[in-house]
Image (tube, rainbow, N blue to C red; front, side, top):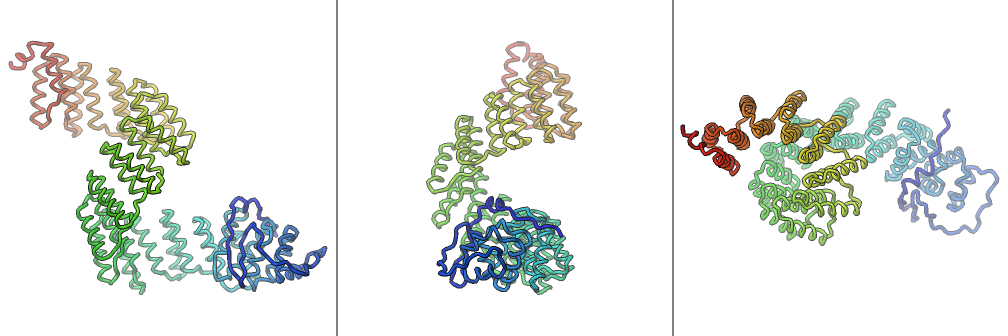
Length: 639
């Protein structure tokens, strides 16, 4: 037989357990408290024998000599503790008091599991759950070993109930230990025990939250195999799973299936389905389900309407969303902050800040406090509109209302100031963010690198990349593109291409923006042929050149006066289905004027106006400049 491992006291010190106070027979006990409990002194404290016996220990327990038990706990052997626990198993409240006063590092896995099996008989499960979590989290035994020891304790005590196994699974679920919960489910099955419906629901719920959707179907199938009855909660979870998988038709059909089993859907069932339809852009389908639930006599709640309002806002059907919101209040439902935030977000995206702020004011009047999300939405919208002062005022208001900015708030503020070119304020906000213990995210670093690149501070931008990597924050495509753009704009093409290699090492695939930026950098150097080679390289990576790619080459060739190559790229661009833009025509006209080909330049001018493309200052500047250089421009064009 394998020796039992002792539970290290360091494990319990690490978790800094808080006492759990219970009341048994008019006394209070704190489970795992490090503070001795108040107790009246016994007038006849027994003398301590040289050899401790179970009977002596039991006498101490029954006479509430807890101070002596605490004093003796380091001397209690595993067998003595085990015999004592077995003797007390009919009085689990005394076991709870006993465990509360012994040194926990004297309990090995066997005695811990014996304690769990006994405490599982107390009506409240929290005491057994508390110890189970410490054993599982402490890593002193595998899940299989814990299950076997608990099973052995159950047999030793002749306990008929299998509740202790259900509690083991429940503890794993509460700790978000999906693997361990899954294992325990199968251990129960293998030993011929059937988990409760509530236990299965706990596993299903955890798997859903962790997005382990395939595993939910495995457990659900096992429930049918073991003839474990599904509850309305079970069906609600599985409908949610189907909605997450995008199988809306099957999710709807599951309601009929549960009704055939005489399990009536509730408001949560319909809300889950409505949310599934609306989140997938199927608002009309959500409305039909709303009508169906009303027909069944199930009254919609705030969550029902919130899902529909959210769906309408995502489709930019804001008037309908506002109308549904009004109807919701007419029937006596009180919207929550989430619903208000949905409407505020919708109107902010539309650019209607007046309406967005009116909803904020309305929620305040109704006694619903704006959340950090409310302020984040409004601050972001103000920055988009360039209203920096108003955004700063809103941040102050946020603080006055006792709300603390979160990482999203700081990212909005930093990004907003970066876009406005206020790098000093952006870095000041970074310092403030760090002082409050909020770690910068990839978005934070991207904004700061962007502003540094625009200000040609490329060394600082590179240093910031190194800093974020040392903190374990991985860059993404957007960040690399910003950094590459900065180096290209400053003429450091070697560093730009080094960054492309770093992207490959980090397995971050470049896109057309990456290559367009590199092509523009090469064209600035007059190396249009090398830019042209980049087009072939991007095609080799499976990246399709876009109209910017072609315009970059046309501009590059035109600036050099290589009009034959420029028109060749223009023709290739047309063959790929891209229509010439203002930039295309301006580049070609500029090149033709540079080569003093006024006739062709004027033809292109007529062509672009016929296609509805309005010439701009650059167009006319090129033509005027050409006229100034060649007095015969007008005559040449008239011939």
